[in-house]
Each structure stands twice: as structure tokens, then as C-alpha cells.
Length: 433
Image 1 (cartoon, rainbow, N blue to C red):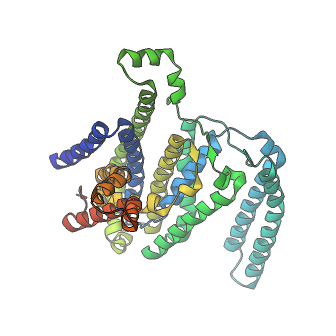
Image 2 (cartoon, rainbow, N blue to C red):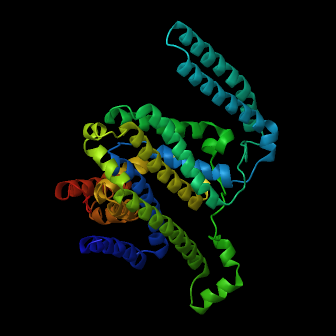
């Protein structure tokens, strides 16, 4: 890392420290944790775009699958939900997978013609109705039981840390399925396909209450080891004695300690992902991926399987995003499908990669930390800044409108930053070598 890069990271560090000194350390650490998670997601997207030139606009869906993994793995089980119809749901899903597998076998093994078309039609249509006949009664039974507080099958009750790699696996499986269908499309069609599939994932999570309570949300998800709950710290005699010794407020200090532990865990994961990404980028595999990105025809002429390599990097990048999505849900302690939107989980991550410098892992990290800070600090400072700007205006509809629109300052600020970077440093703050 050269001196220019060190200066850039130092300036970003000054922004976070300044936020803690002049505003609140709780706020600074909260922004830092979200910035670290965003940086991990940006690294995943950088693998797809910076290494291979794949334009994935379905980042939101992979992050949501990571969050779903936390519910399925670490949420407490619901024995009554399973008793009401959980096994019926599993049987229905297994039957659906079997229908798809059998249809695939028919397509691959029967000769093209009328017989194959009729067989596929009969299996798919008949299988669909049989699948719904098995699944629907069980779903209604589970969702109808104690729906105010449950109405789902729950999770396995395992430690939250185990859910993070499972989140990556879920996202990787979805990416493989999407890639097998969409990676043969042109880049603009790939972007449309991934965006649409991400929206489908969110719609399924919102409407299938048996899975994770849908829009009723899953709350009270366990925290990862070794992060304690603030209330437990506030009841600990050792912690209270330590806070009293230094004259600290136990409530505020407990929140800061929890956020510091999260920052430590996320920082370790981020450094591990950077290390592996750098190894991959500098390896023969990384050079091959960049050659495919720069000229697919020439790479294919040299004997490279372009579609297979695209699928490979698409799966790896999506797994990283899913891993980070699981970490975010563990930190929040809840899964709220309504909060997943393309602006926050797709567009913002893309801005981080572009501003930092696509094709450069350290650029993706810088962009994640910088844009993550900017996105959240403007939300906090926006109303105050707008109140100062409108101080001289008379009370009336105009002043009320300007103050109420302060929340949109983050979009304006983000757009201005993006335009400035594209104008004066079009390859990003830390461009690819």
C-alpha cells in the first residue's frame, strides 16, 4: 500500500474519530460497524465486477438470504409449529425438488420432439398441482397457529456464528441457480435478471410467514459470541466497578463496549476477506479472470471456459455478500424483510465500489468505509444543517417543506460525491493497477 492510499485511509479514520469526538462515540461506532459490513459486501461485488466485469444488480437478494440464514440457524425452534405442519412443509419442498430433478432428467435424456414436450408438460403441470396439494395445508396450519407471536417453524437454536457461513452457502446456491440461467445473457440483460430475482427473493420472504414470519418480522435473534447484551453488562458487578473507577456512565459505556466488540469481530472478518481476495487477485486464477474481463474472445481462443469462470466468480462474490448479510442481521438482532431495498443494498454498494476503485480490493474497502460514513452521517446531520440554512426564513409552508425534506440530503450528497469522483478520478480513489 503506497503513501497515497495510507493518506486516504487516514483521512477516513479522521472522519470517524471526529464523529466520536464532536457528536457521539456510540454514533461513530455504529457507523463504523455498518461501514465494515458494507466494505465486505463491496469486496464481494468487486470480485464480480472488478475481476470479471459481471454487472450484478441483485445484491439485495443475496444479503437478504444471509439474513434468512440467521433465522433458520440461530432462532429458537418452534416445536408447536413443526407439530402443526412443519414436516408437511418439508415433504412438499422435497417433492418440488424431486419434480424439478425429474423434469431435468427428461429434458436431458429424451430426444427433442413431441414426446419430450408432452412428458415435460405432464410432469411439470401435474407436479405443480401435487406440490401445492401437499404444501398448502401444512403452510396454513403453521401460519394459523399462534400467529401473533409465532406462526412459523423457527430455527435450530444454534450459535449465531454458525449462521454466517450458512448465509454465504445459501447465497452461493442461489447465485449458482441464477448464474446457470442468466450468465449466458448480455450484460444489460444480466443486470435486469439479477434485479428481478432479488425482488422475488424479498417478496417470498415477505409473504411466506411460515419461514421467518414475513412482514411481522423476527425479533430477539441471539447475538454472536462473545458479544454480551447491554443489560447483562449493566448488572455485572465487575463492569459496574470498572465504570465507577473511571467515572463512566454504565448505560452509555455498555453500549460502547458492545459496539467495540462488534467492530473487532467485523474487522477480523474483513481482514480475512481482504487477504483471501488479494491472494486470489494475484494468483494465476486472478490474472485469468481479468483477461476474460478485458477480452472474452481472446480468452476463449486461448482455451478458457468463459461461462464456467463467470459462474465461479459470480458464486464466490455472492457468497461474500450473503456472509455479510448474515453478520448484519446478527448485529441487528432481527430480520425485517421490509428494510431490504435496492437503494441501500444494491445501489449504495455499487457506489462504494465505483468511488473506491473497481478492480482494487483496497479501493472497495475505502469506498465502503467512506460512503458508509457519508450515508449515515448525513442522515444525522441533515435536519440540523437544514434548520441552520432556513434560520432566516419566515415560518410557513416553504420552511416546513425544506426542513421535512432534510432526509433527502443524503441522496443529494451521495450524487454530488459520485459525480465529483467520476469527473476528477474516473477510475476511483484507489484505481486498479
